[in-house]
Each structure stands twice: as C-alpha cells, then as structure tokens.
Image (cartoon, rainbow, N blue to C red; front, top):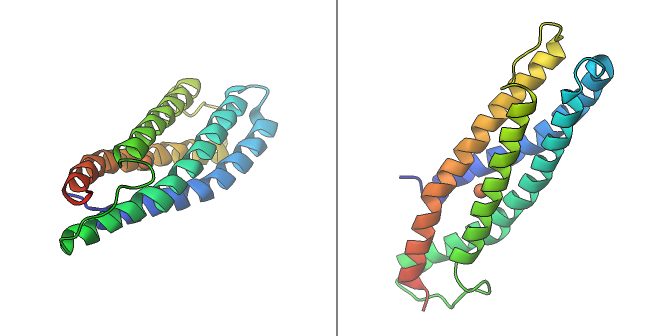
Length: 168
Ligand SMILES: [Fe+2]
C-alpha cells in the first residue's frame, strides 16, 4: 500500500511534468493555432482548457506539498514516537483533504472537456508532427494525473485514520 514516502515522488513528478508541459503545450498550441487554427478552432479551446487546468494544478500541488505532506510527516513521526500532536490550525486533516478531493474533481472535469473538444485526442488527417506530439503529450499527461489522483485516494483515508491515533 502506498505511503507518504513512496507517494511523494509521484506527486513531484506530476508537478514537474505539469510545469514543463505547460510551457510546451501552451507554446506548442499557440504555434499550431497559427498553422491550423483556421481549420481547427479546437486548438485554441484546448489551450484555454489546459491553461485553466495547469493553473489549478499548480495551486493544488503547492497546497499538498506545503500543508498536507508536512502534516502527514508530523503525524507519522508522532505515531512512531508514541506522542500526541496538538490539533492543527485547519482543525482536522479531513478539511484540507475535502478541498483536495474537490480540486481533483475540477481537474477531472477539465480533462473530460479537453477530451471532448479533441474527440478523444483523435489526430486529424491534416495534422503535422507538432500536432500529433501535442495530443500524445496531453494523453500521457492525463494518465499521469489520474495516477496522482488514484494515489491520493489511497493516501487520504490513511491520513484521516492516522490522525485519529495521534491528535489529542
Ligand atoms: Fe492531489
């Protein structure tokens, strides 16, 4: 079962992939928009959706890294050393987790919209190599993000359970 320790690299990879791909995809889609925008207005729509997704993910990952994971580490240390933790400023870990889950749903909705406007990333017959590369990158990005959400869904209930044992 994944723990905080082996979940973290997946999160960091997703964050790095998100930052790197954002530049690649926004620049790439802008170039494609110039070359294919007349025949494929969906490229501009796709870029706007991806921009919204990457903005949301950047904030989401930041919260996980700066609040959630440090608190999870504190809880693990407290459990290992059999000491109690004071209640955190956010009341209970269930509160930020609920927010994270809502953000996952928002991200999932944006991913579905991206699939819809691209007909499931179907490469059109007049597509150039950059066009194909963009769709392949987005398809891979979607898989990475689903993996992140899957691992969070395993980790989150464990965090709630652990908190019950260490927070007084
Ligand atoms: Fe997450």
